[in-house]
Image 1 (tube, helix red, strand yellow):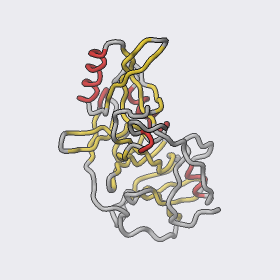
Image 2 (cartoon, one colour):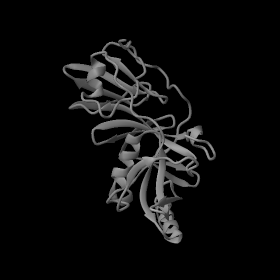
Image 3 (cartoon, one colour):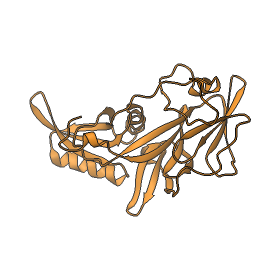
Image 4 (cartoon, one colour):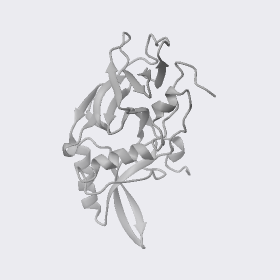
Length: 245
């Protein structure tokens, strides 16, 4: 089924062979990204006190760090992990920004049932960056990007609830889909840019990258080959304590 102009974009598959916007420009849908609940493991230690020290250091930087017990080869370890992510690609982006910069190692791994984080980070990919793209000013103030692929142009707009795509000549949205707005700032733990949300107790690191806009509760972030909307979301109820995955 072809997309109508102004349709809300489906999730981008980050492993797509062709840029998502090329498929979009041709009016074709693309596959959805792998979903689930993920975290980033940084280290596994035998000493609980050492693990608690690492957790405290990461929390002081703004990371949602926690520890949990695990077994390996009949021995008990304390794992130090960071965050909850709604897909593996988001966890991998965080792990890449952590490893060798903030922590020695960082590896995406599935979130355990009953793990401590009570919120997850949701990343909604707007587009994989083509050679020609730029931020443009929109009358409604929504983050709007003009992209051009294979001689065809489109505007990609984040309305606070999701991405919308408008080919040349299509009408633009007038208002945001949601009300209210979070406040975001840029942080540099380990010298790597991260976007953080400002809250009453300080800042909470959200996702790696450069802040280029925001709408509603989401920050618009540029990194490597993509532009994404990052926001906090409740942890999946199936991973609450005492529930099986």
